[in-house]
Length: 496
Image (tube, rainbow, N blue to C red; front, side, top):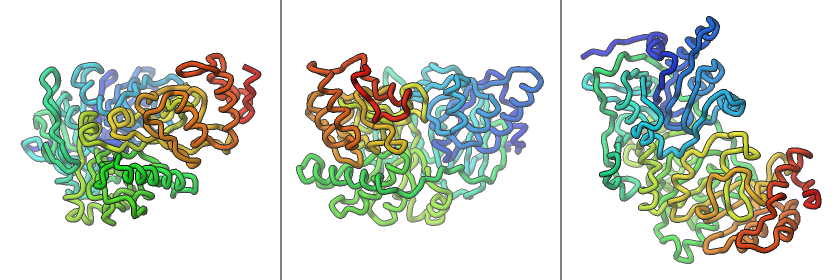
């Protein structure tokens, strides 16, 4: 059969009020860019006419402004899951305008298949190629594409010619069976391939092809500053120490890394340290720093869900695709983030925290406990199942007015039972094998900024005895001081 070439506006007309759409991509990499702005225009026109128009959105992770941003500003989103990074979307969520479901990324596809979130009416998939018999070759991100394509009543393909057909062959598309008879995911090394290079769909469901030539809306990260470089150095020194003690094998272990400037600094430090052998990565997102490590031979292989890199870096990968073909693989998020695979491979997980408390509980999503930042992403998938789980962050924020280490976190994403190591620019707190009281001493002594050490020691003294000592009426006192006085350093425990 020959697919109809349709405009983005015609494609958007298939999406009606109350429907749910499923999108390709993972981060802005591989996300739709042409149809979603037209959906926003429909929403604006309907609202101007006094009619309702809102939809549900299922994604692999965050998207670009052409989806989360434009649709948020058009007030076109009723419900969305999971992770996001868009400022306008975040504002709408924190204003109570969007029902946002922040679930673990590894669970998104299967919870759709289980029927927990309703049906998928339309899938919008970015591709670099599509065949007459329904093979869709994806671009720089996979996410939940296989699942939404299979579940959707209709499929719209954005055929993006920006990079030609260079991405073909990078993907390994595999969907596990659903319970009760699910077998193991047969990934035993980061480089194992277990699926197909494309998404196979019923060609009858493809209602049209939208021709596009647009780059990904990549997010830029600033160069590492002194604090993030010190954090990176501390992480590298910790891992080298564990390797010398025989806790980490001399051949090292595969790494998982979160996103952002601190994550880039950590990977840069690992690549530069001669004590760290060449390693593999089994992670959800690969950034520019990893591509540099692959070119330099410090990273032997990268398994990921998304090439969340700058446009210049992405072009360089495709220009040198013969070099990268056997060094990269892109998987669906339920495989890249699989807790089963993470535990089997013995991953070292490295993620960032907004705040941590003196017992090792981590908040990675909510500012002051109530305002969503981005979401949990895949950090929980890896943390709970890692060989060693590491969280890092600067010890202070907002010019020192906020301490990243507090008596009790204002929101818990990763509890003390799953967090092995906490690292700031101040130092390293190894929490393994320690009781809560021992953890508090380790964290305050090694990770807390000098401006806050005495404040936290005073809290510990006030908390008294117990298996996990707390003074309940004062546990969020530093947060309350911030809200009232704008500076946690002004905390006076006598006021509580």
